[in-house]
Image (cartoon, rainbow, N blue to C red):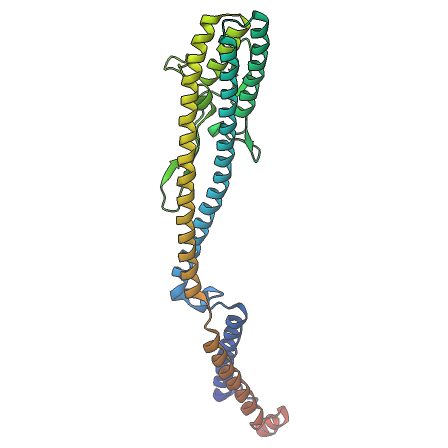
Length: 309
């Protein structure tokens, strides 16, 4: 009768399998530079590694969001700098028209230039970054205003009360990163009427006063324009503060990125010197085991048959 594999052979094969697996694991650690390439490599450390990877992924996303928002904010701030120049131009045109020696014809010409300035202001309220309207808040896929010279403010509002954009930093703190076109260009009273510092209304009133040769109306419009310029300066100050917040938030996110990456590297990186020694020892042991096994007497099938006869 043919006997099965002996106990010694079974033990040898089991040990050989373990040694082969250990050698393969060490080889993978050396080639990948990581001590954990699969859950079975170190179950005890796996939870910490997964948490570090999750934390690093989250802070990387925060960093990416901050970078994108920073570009949007810079675009918005640049647009408002241009608005400042346009309002200065309107103020200059209005002051020219306020001169009592200026004729109605000249004022009419000045009115046309103010109309062009109003159109430019509407275009600036439609400023986009990466296909998004930066002053449309939560409705960033569409502009907030369009030009309408028949409207009391010279514009039509296309979006009603959009929400301002918020962003979360790496610590979980949320802060506003934008103002809407309504807040900046079309400040309104509680009843919805234009506030005294309404930019669109002030510029449109300068236009109308010049067109109508209305000196008193022009004086009042220029006074409103000054209030509008002050209001714009406050919006610029807001964006300057946001730029500072974003810069600080980016620095904090980078600090967290470095911390998590360092922890992850420490938890998973292979000690190459130690691994190289271990690999050499394992390979030597594996080779020795194979050589020893090959030197043992072999029992052929004929021997087994003879022994059973």
